[in-house]
Length: 99
Image (cartoon, rainbow, N blue to C red; front, side):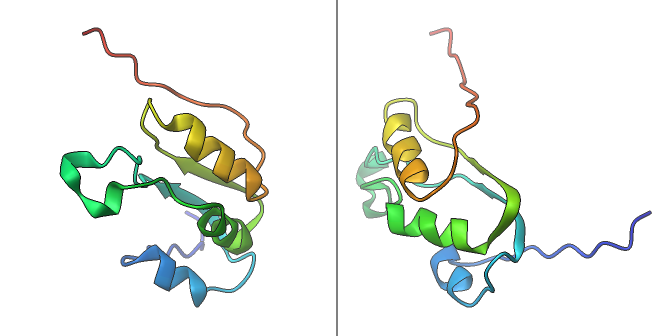
C-alpha cells in the first residue's frame, strides 16, 4: 500500500480554496449549481463564474483533472466558463434518459 496522504476538504469551497496553495490539489470533483433555478433556490440561479473556475485552476496541480457535473440544458454555459478559466475540455459524459 502507498504512503500517500489523502485529505478531503468539507465546507464552502470558495472560502477553503482561498487558503490553499497554488498547485496543491490532485483533482477536483464537483456537482456545482446547474443554473436552473431549482425549486426557486437562489444558490442555483446561475452556473459558477469564470473567476470561480480560475480559482480551481490555480489550486490544481499541472496535469490534474477537474470533473464537474452540469445540467443538460446548461452544460454549454458551464463548459465555456471552465474553458475560459484555462482548462482544456477533453471529454464529456452525458446521462441519457429514456422518458
